[in-house]
Structures are given as C-alpha cells and as structure tokens.
Image 1 (cartoon, rainbow, N blue to C red):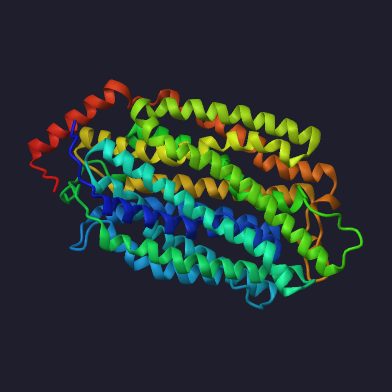
Image 2 (cartoon, helix red, strand yellow; image 1 turned 90 degrees about the horizontal axis):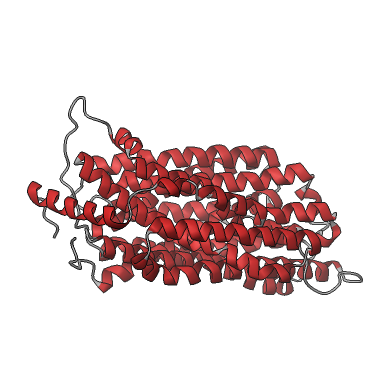
Length: 495
C-alpha cells in the first residue's frame, strides 16, 4: 500500500478553511430557510412544501450531472478547482437575495423566492461537487486521504455552527436595541444581518482554496468508446457505492436535529420569565430570547456530540472498519432517541432531554466523515474493476445524498405544520407573537418528535445497508495494493 505523504500542512489547512467557509454558507440556507419562508415571509405551507421538495430533488439530480461535466475533461487550471473559484461570488449574491425580504405581493413574493431558491441550488452545485471531490485528487494514499477528510469535516462543522452563534447573539441583543413590538420585522432584520455576515467571511475562505491546493491524482482523459458502459452505468453497477448512497438516503432524518431545531424552539419550548404583565415589546424580546436560547441548546448538543466524535474519527478510522463504526454508532443513536422521546412524552422538559439529544447526535459526526471516506474507497474499487475513475461523479453521489436528505427533512417539517394545524401568520405577525406555552401540549410534542423519534428511526434504517458492505479489513488492503500495481502498469504518475 502507498504510504507516501503528498499533502502539505498548508494545503491541508487551506482545504479545511475552505470547508469552514462552505459550511457557513450551506448552514445559513439549510438550517434556517424553512423557518424564514414559513414564519417570516409567511408563504403558504403547501407552496413551501412543493418548492423545497421539488427544487431540492432537482438540485440533487444536478449533482450527478455536474459530476459528469467535470469528469469529462481536465482544463489547464485543473479538473476541480476552477468551478470553486467561478461559482463563489454568485453563491454569495444569491444567499443575500434569499434573505432580502422584498416588499412584494404574495404572488410576486412566491415567484421571487422560487427563482432565487432554485438558482441558488444550481449554482451551489457547481462549486460543491468539485470541492468535495478534491480529496480524491489531492493524494492516492488512502490513510492520508481519510485524515484530510476527517480534518476538513471538523472545520466544515465548525463553519456550520457560525450562523448558530449569530442567531443566539442577535436574538439576545437585537430586540432590546430595536425596542420593537413588531416581531415580524425584527426577524426579517435578523436574518438579513446573518446572511450578510455569513457570506462575507465564508466566501473569502471558500474561494481561496483555489490558490493553495494542488491536484495530483488526475487520471488522463479517455475518449468514450462505443459500446462501453457510460459513467452513470459504472456508478450504478458499483455495488459498494450504491450501499453507501442507500445508507446516506436512509439517514436523512439525522438532519432534523439541526434543521428542525428552530421550529422546535418556536413551538415546543419556552424558557424565560413569565410573560404575564409584559408590554408588547418586552414580550417580543422575551420570546425571541427563548427561541434563540432553545435553538442554541440543541445546537450545543449537536456540536458536542458531532464535533466531539469527529475529533476522534481519525483515530477510530485507523483502528476500526468504517462499516463497524457506522453500525455501532447508528444503533446507539437510535437507542438514545427512544429515551429522548419518552422523556419528552412524559415531561416536555428540555433540560432532562439534553444528555440523550447529545448522544443521538454522535452518529452525525460519524456519518459526516465516514461516508465521504467510504465513497473514496468505492471509487478505488471502481477504478480497479473498470479502469475508470469518475472522481467528480463519485463526489456528486455524496452531494445527492446530502441534498435529497435535506429535502426530505425539510419537507417533513412543513408536513408537520400542516398536520397539526399551525398557522404561521397567526403565530408571528406585526400585531402578535405567540409563545410555545400558548399551544396545546399535543402540538408541542408533535414538533418535538421532529428532533427525537424521527431521527432515531432514520438511524436504525440507515445501518441496514452497511451489513452488506464488503470493502473492509484485509479485502480493502488487498484492493489498495492491486490498484497501486495497476496504476504502475499503466504508467500513471502521481506528482
């Protein structure tokens, strides 16, 4: 097996800081857009459901298409890097437009939101697919590749927490500064400030990746031969890769802890002083402070569980097979989610739920790292079996999984609004703002189930495909040895 080190510390840091910036921008969209559309712009739930489900599914389909475009040829600037640079500024502009809250009629606002949302997803794909395909071309050393992925995913997770910090700080400070009783206008201002700050920093970190990394594992472009399997056909015929994709899709509920937390904070829990005898402005400040605090509690649980796990992933991935790590942690996360649900059912006490939410967040860290490394191994397997290495298309599989999972998670939230009869225009407006404690207990628990039992069932299901995954142990070591020998016979040189 190739044990040569190729990636310098400067490259490793450049890629990881780029991942941090990418995490900031993606979290600004994925963690808050459903709340923004439903409760701030107050678009019809059915419209939001259709927009997010159809647009995100289309966006997920775009990932493989983008992968095929990238794999088709290598430019003089590189195979992956140019797309990252050229797409950065459009992503920044579209993110701000997404949270601009223009003063339009309901119909015009729907059109505006749909266009910006769909275009954002398509442009983001142009940069996301090649960015997460970079570990495949940075080094042929599987251990170094895994270490690079682990390190960068930690920073990506840190980046995703930056909007959460902004949400907390702004939620605690801005209402008192504005002194407003208009909770709706306050939320519009808050989200715009968050978007501007996020893209200002995230775009710089993300785009600078282009200038500080080197693509090494570039398999020469080969013209397609009539009758040979297409790129998509090779992907679908790669059984190990399809098992990883199935695991990712079935684990889509894991996104709920982060995506649904803002909705749970609005409609399941209130922590703070009694709201009786408060002025309207004081009531707005108290409720918004509670929403920010509850959202932050969930985020801290996710951070401790997810990032704490990710810090240990390099060590765990050296000692244990990837499939064993996934199966063990996902089953443990399922068990923790059952306890979370039971505590919520009998007490609806947020603080008692904290340790169980933390434990159920551990699989997030595992899946966020291991699935990327497993896809790289699957591409090694495919190269050995077919002679082709579709790096970008393989990376697109992970993008497909993430976006489809996010679409399913977000759609579940909107469906829950409709199922329990929540009407955002009656909960948050310029005239009134409702606390979670004003809702019926069954409505509150229904919202809480989005971050308890739903993720748990998803974690249980996603462990099933891993029992059939075979690239592990001695078989993986032999595969790497055979691949290195095959490359040497073809005269493929890694610079």
